[in-house]
Length: 192
Image 1 (cartoon, rainbow, N blue to C red):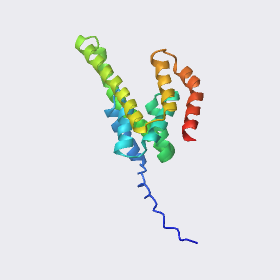
Image 2: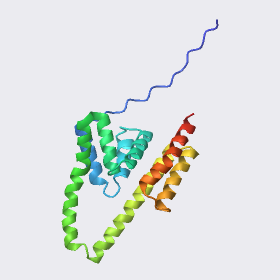
Image 3: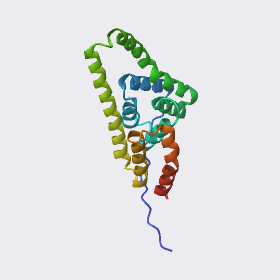
Image 4: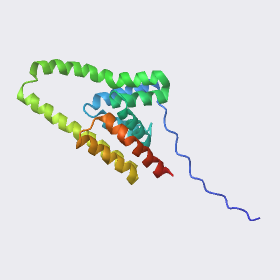
């Protein structure tokens, strides 16, 4: 019986940090305050690249789930990740952090908009901000797609969803219900 040479095993990846309740609150407060108009872009950058609390794949999965559930997708992601790391208190801390600071800023801006919203330069600034927010959303989608490099069946389902929403202007529930079987089949096919 020949001796088998020892197998070199790959080193285990370093353990990812598990944030506490305070870290969840402060991180989501920062995300909320920095990410006006594009919270998911900032959240992905902070949670995946900076803090490394979740992988690119995990963030994409949680974001995808957050987008098909009722309510703001950024809040759905915050609740999900907060609960994953620290249960109910973590979900509450992430949610309050995400919306607490921006809520105060928004109240102040709403009062200013009531006074000056019809001024042409204010209208122009708001139009520019809206364009920047749309660009951030597209940039985040491109970055996630580039890093994950989904297989063609999954990419095809994503493109079908994009066309259904952007070109055909179908409502989100119809898109989700119509494409869910194809998405499940694509995921199953690529993992076999």
